[in-house]
Image (cartoon, rainbow over all chains, first blue to last red; front, side, top):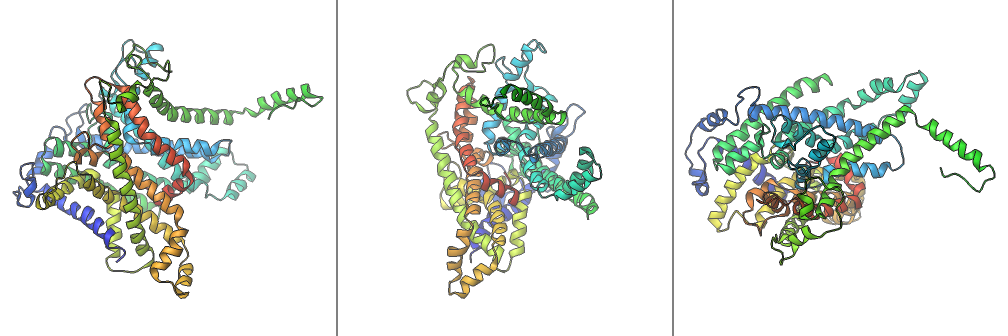
Length: 290
Length: 308
């Protein structure tokens, strides 16, 4: 009785749509028949074929990766960088110093600020006009002669999107790691000091093994969310210049071309890639840890 | 560490201080300070840039060089947002109101529904509990773009039958936000309820309280920190949400702030100072809420593994 409204929403707005989305991916659903979606014609694997053969999806060559490969590279690299930066931040904040509480609050700003605000500030900093901060700094230093359009340069754009992702999401990794760091038994470090271990020895032999599990969990969570993330790339580059990823492509198929069937098929492919990866992760990494 | 001038041997003490200071700057400390400074600047600079740019004039924004400190606090950008007499008037007030109209109901309904649901998950046994819990976990996995297509089609179908539009319909948007926030809220609250000893509630039941009386008089007052953090989280999710609002809202007077800001950004004559002013307006409430309730929120974050 208590649970019924919540259950209704979870089933009606999450589980049912999820199954319905599989159905859509096998039917020809466009704007025309959206109001009469249950009579949409069945088209078999056509939507999937169209997605896989789409120029935006398919890997072309080393310069033009296509959304599938870009998604995988973007998610893995940015998650690795995010967790690494989060680890450094957590180690910083684990040392006592004056103003630590304030520093911790500031470190969380990128994570809690609205994505639209921070994405547009970054775009304004990277602005192609000479009044953009990066252009201005590099021109003053004499590194470049003329302003550049950083987010409109293949390769560089992907790198910047990765840096942005790390900047925005490292606080989450930091908080999780910090919580674990503070749970480590202090006597272990004292014992190690007595045995003559230096800081690096202690880090390698005490801190890292203790953090192993939390690092794995944070990596997995962030990887899933990054793989599914739409806003960041859509707002920074709109998916252009070699940064198109599967969620943005799904949006483009569905709400730019209004081919909902193709969009759903693309989203299912995204889910299958994610599921496969998680299975592999559970089989190898998790088992290793027992 | 202020030197003590009243002392007779102040000179010696001052020397001693400099000596101590010099000795205290060891290599690890220097590296530590360096990394900390790097973090703080790279985090704070974009926020400084956002606020300072919002006070610049159009000339300062478009000049040949970046202007790091605006010449004066110019309210030009804010006037464009709020003053109907300006040539470029964005009517941003309406968008703020839309965001409030969506974020507050989402937070209130999500807290009420998830309190009931989380209590049932934490304390009661019922059929379909595992299915529900797995359903909640699935939400963590499912990309928003995957759910938005069937949701859009479903609601269009229901709307055609019952005679309401899918687009520019704020209550519909609230319902989709509930779908996104409820699982997270349920998870956080259920975790919290489990930490409250069941014995306290049993004592209440023995003393003749009904189950609802126990929830109302015992469980909820003990859970205020968790309830606060859940309501702030759901509020922030609804306040910041971009994709669903982009798909479900069509006309600029119905836009929530994120969509309106993106519209100003894409204006043919670039107006970064107005974009930054609108972003500042949108960010300030979130930062204030966060700073005021930081302790609750960080605890909630690590406890729930909250999805953004």
